Image 1 (tube, rainbow, N blue to C red):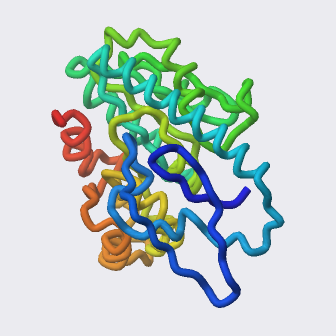
Image 2 (cartoon, rainbow, N blue to C red; image 1 turned 120 degrees about the horizontal axis):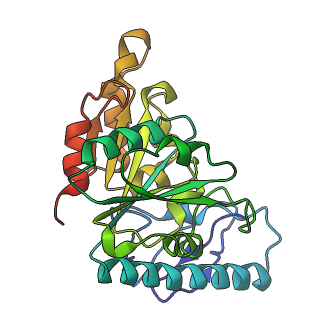
Length: 274
């Protein structure tokens, strides 16, 4: 559907662009409970170039309704979690980054120490939810293909549905494994308190530059599969430079979910009091 610009009051509008380019000025500040961007960088990438769309008021009206519903549900989710004294982390990545393997290692590290729950988001199947069994965590499977249109991301109403299947009063930490996708999940507040993502060294050094909205939206990045570095032509220094260019203050963990290298630091961040 393309990208539109959202203001603090929830309104969404399309910007007028001329053929030679445009300037983007605001007399207001932006803030979000679960921010789309963790810095005050330009929102141009969120706005996009709509010159090729024959768009009208109907598109904007639909987007306003979608975002209003989502933001209200996200606020309700956070209130439910806060009331139960549960910290929630929205964990995102591309498919195949090792996110589920990292979650399994994380649950094993926290078993008997922190009461964990997982919202396991996928379009179809219980494969990943099944893999996370056996570590004492409550797991709520959330297939977007089961009544949520097969979406490529989780949104707040979906997560609200998943929370209904968890005993929040018996949890300390909720890990929300989002659908594998480097685009849409970054744009939807699900009601979490923090955002993190997993980026595998097998994906290349250029991903922060190609998907800046995702990399800028998170509080922490886990650089996974570092055990494969001896076998790859991957420049860690270049990746980190690219990451810091789009999100200078992000927390970075270099990990191997397979060997456990670096996982302790990641777990310490997850469980640190905010």
